Length: 103
Image (cartoon, rainbow, N blue to C red; front, side, top):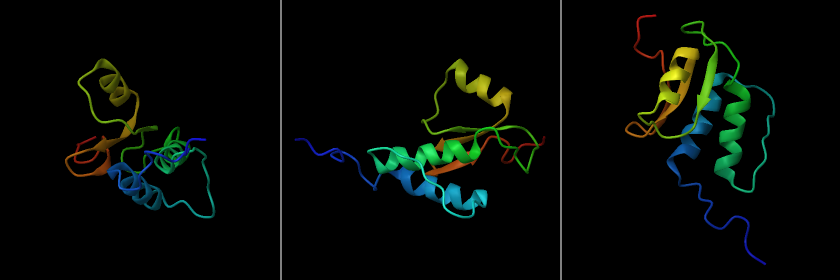
C-alpha cells in the first residue's frame, strides 16, 4: 500500500503563504477543506474563502489563482474579471492584482 502523503511537503512555499493569506482574510471560526495533500487542502480553503468575495481595496469581485503566473490569455482575462489573488513566486506570497494600482 502506498503512502497517500508521499511527496506532500509543508515546505512548499505556497503552503505557508496560503495560511498567511487566510489570516489576512479575517476568517474567524473553523474552516476546513479536504485533500490527501496538506498543500492542496489549504489552497482549496483559500479558494473557498476568496472566490466570489469582494475586494475591500478596489471593490471588485475576488478571484483566487494558486498557480504560478504565466503569459497566457487566461491570466489577462482573470485580471479583467476582478481582483485576482495570485501567487507571486519572487516575494513568496499571494498578492492582490489591485495592489499598487490606481483603481
